Image (cartoon, rainbow, N blue to C red; front, side, top):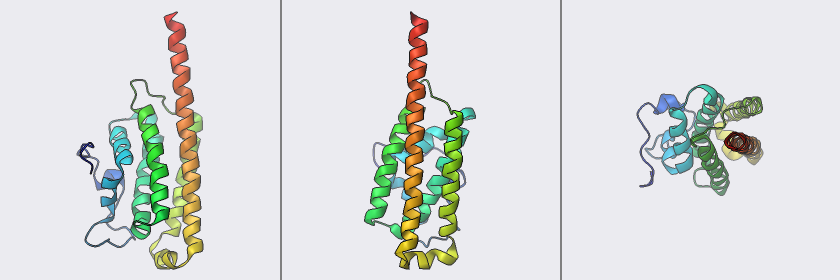
Length: 184
């Protein structure tokens, strides 16, 4: 973990992040799959932020935890590949923006649109999980079409997360407009 990032708080361990050691992904050397989090600064910061949240952010919290689990599985076979790095960079940028919105004093909350986007993201993650099951993992490494499918699912997830960010941004502007009107 980088020196600027505090360690994950207790209570945000394997069970809370849903990264299980019984994952179909083989160990990389002697490193279990969940160690990938130390290289995802903004994802871990956002998970830490959400760990303290309850109530309206639950849909986002559950989908980000599920996404972290899925990323841990994908990291196992894309380890260090350029597709993985591109995926990581895109997602890290989104997690940084989401942390800024949901870590602010006035959080945008979760609208019906965001709830639906979270449901759609969860559906995409379920497709990825199906593709990454143990029976197909070896074939996935060998068949670039399957790899392309997984990456297409992640591209859709990235697009939906961008929409969540845009929704949070628009909601924050509405909150600021209302507070500006009250002050006048």
